[in-house]
Length: 126
Image (tube, rainbow, N blue to C red; front, side, top):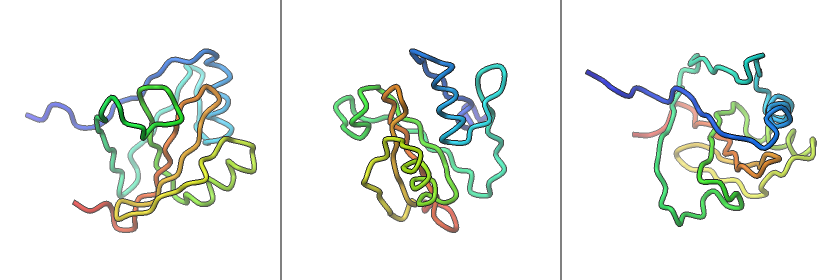
């Protein structure tokens, strides 16, 4: 019998939840509902969700000091990063591209590093 079948939710605390919800609505296009969150429906053909544990000393989340990072799938990484820069968001100048797709990063106003991921055509290897 399968036990865990995917990520059911991501939850984190904020100093100013209303302001942070508005930032995510405005800049990342999340459809924030009256109850304070949103639901993503698995309609993408390559709707992969990755779960991983990093070493405590990893600098992958830098410059964030939080012990977690959320990765969001996007259809066009370059367009999303350009829009975020135009809106004055703190977008990392660096991007990465590999067999696993294209990656870029932005910081939210409370210092959480957000990874944006454009999966490769045809899905991820493996």
